[in-house]
Length: 235
Image (cartoon, one colour):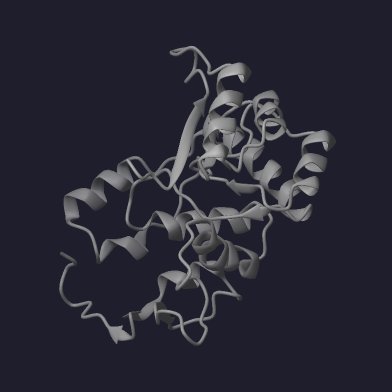
């Protein structure tokens, strides 16, 4: 089928499914690598992350979520500079200002977002584990990319803010969202502003290095060197 990457699922989904065993995921990783394919793994538990790294996995989708990571996992990332972490942080579980979305959404959709915009203690604890783990791996020099699990057009802006709140600097997050993500996707003509690459970028009205939420203050979108007409919805 000429796929670009193989994704495996090493998670019980809260006990709903049988977890992929080390024997199976080890065989999958070995076979994929023989065929020149990389493997990314959806994980939840610390011990699974360690087993997958030992088996040669190329990327982890989500960080460890069951507990705070230990020095062993940090050391494993340090020993594997090409190992990629895509955090996919969960919602923070706190009420946030959503007014920046109001102009671009139908009233009923915005009202639904506001209705769900509440403080949730369990979600806060869940976010806290993953945020601390991201901070530790970022400090250790792990290669981090941007990914969202929200399936929402504005999700990357939320994820970038969450990554900064977890302890990354705005510049580290911008590099993760652009250069690192393009390299992981093997998009050789994107990810950085360089001669010979596609001119794909956004122009902002404020400096995102001062506040990462300034990525939302978009003045213009340039795609392949041409400004998009933002007065019309995308098709």
